Image (tube, rainbow, N blue to C red):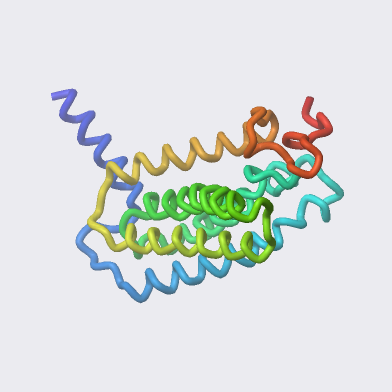
Length: 205
C-alpha cells in the first residue's frame, strides 16, 4: 500500500512538470507563435551577448553568463542562457502546451550539440572560422531547437520525459557554471587566439 502511494505521488509530481491540464487540446497557432518568438528572441539576445562581458568591464559575474573568450564552449553561452531566459519568461504561458519541460530541454540541448558539430565540420574544410558561416550555424541551430520544441509541445503528454528533462536542464546548468570557472584542458574550451582557458587570468582562483 505504501509503495502504491509513493508511486502515485511520484506520478503526480512528474505530471505536474508537464504544466498543462490533461485533456485540453493544444492550439498549433499558440505553439507556432511561441516558437517563432523564441527563435527571434534567442537570435537577437544571443548576438548581443557576445559583447556583454566586454561592456561590463570584464566583470566576473557577467563572465558566468556571457562568453569570456573565443573558445567554442564559451560561445555556446550565446544560445544556452538566452534560451534558458526565454523559457523561464515563457512559464506563465506553459499551461497552453504539453511537455513544457521537454520542449525547454530540447530547445536548449539541440543548439548546444548542433553548433559545435557544424562548426568543426565546416572548419575542417575551410581551415579557419568564417563569421558569415558562424552566424549561419548559430541561426540554423536555434531554428532546429525551436522546431523540436514545437513538436514536443504537440506530442502526447509524457510525465516521465518531462521529469527527465528537468534533470537534464539542471545538469546542463551545472556544467556551464562549473566549466566556466574550471574549464578542462580540451580543445573546445581553449581560446584559439591566445591558448587560454576560461577567464584565463585566474580571476576565480
